[in-house]
Image 1 (cartoon, rainbow, N blue to C red):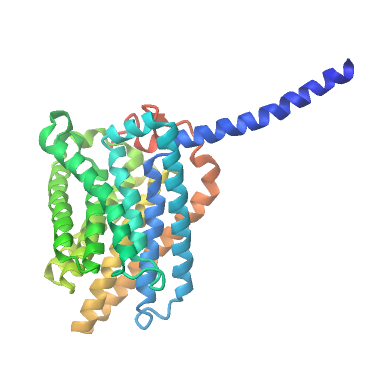
Image 2 (cartoon, rainbow, N blue to C red):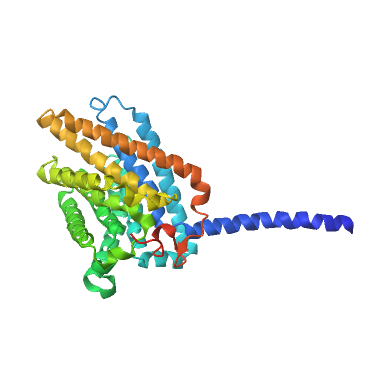
Amino acid sequence: MKGQNNQQPHLQANCEKPTKALNNSISILSRFHAGYFRITISLASQALLWKTLSDQTKEFYNIPSFTFLLVWCVALATQALFCFLFLLKCLFHFQMVREEFLHHVGVNYLFTPSATWILLLQSSPDTLFDQNTAPFVVLWWVFIIPIIGLDIKIYGQWFTTEKKFLSSAANPTSQVTVIANLVGARAAAQMGWEETALCMFSLGIIHYLVIFVTLYQRLSGGNNFPAMLRPTFFLFFAAPSMGSLAWSSITGVFDSLSKMLFFLSLFIFASLACRPSLFKKCMRRFSVAWWAYSFTITFLALSSVEYAKQMKVKEGNNLSSLMSLVLSALSILIFLSLTLVTSLRIDKLLKRSDTYNRSISNDTCPESESA
């Protein structure tokens, strides 16, 4: 009898281990949200930057192409993993996904999975995908349809639904919708679909102007923006940076409009960089929102590379090449720093009980300090 009593605690402990592991996995899945795709869009844009630099080895000191392949493979694997996790959440926690879809911040990040896949297509190795082949076209349609559907939903409700007017729902993350449209426009232009590219570009750039003016006027929607999301202020220059890339792909040259958008993004970047105190509160504790620093600056670096290429062809301007090299180096440095910090904090990133409305974690919590 004593021996049996001594074995019972061990049997109970063995039974509790798988139960505890299962509970942890369910807890992590419930806290996973579309905002984590900021990591994958950063990886995909970084792969595109490395591919662009690798294609211009004479101008950028013989950058090895295997680095691009490594970054692209990591981006593809991470994107596939995150999509799988989000699909599981849709299956087992549909109500949480629905709440995210109805949230004025969370819904904007639902554009990021499709935008990331399109960036991965654009940055894919030439031996894997040709932009004029059927697989590329089919995949582009698969990823662009969710963006168009979300466009109709979000932009339509801004026009018609009183509680969802842009003046009350607008926040810096609203520009993610713009970036997704511009990413799709650039991919369409590279396939030679000029009319489709112009359609996507017009949707993105017109709504960027409307969102920019709305946020610039500090209407009521900006009062509920949490301090933890202040890194997304960098989206103010990411959208025109991607706009300059999309328009240059449509016209085939980095013309005056592309330069205007690039100069606008450069000015906004300088304005934000000169105000480090604005980001002091959000830097006190690590958050996935920090990844907004990475892909936004990468878009600016990509735009600067195209600008430098155009200026060197026309005028032999070395200053533009130096600027693009500095911005590219800054983008890579921030990317590596965030990768290191995230790898060190990965065990705590999804374990914090920092949810709101039972769905999205604290980096989008309206109860945080307002900006």
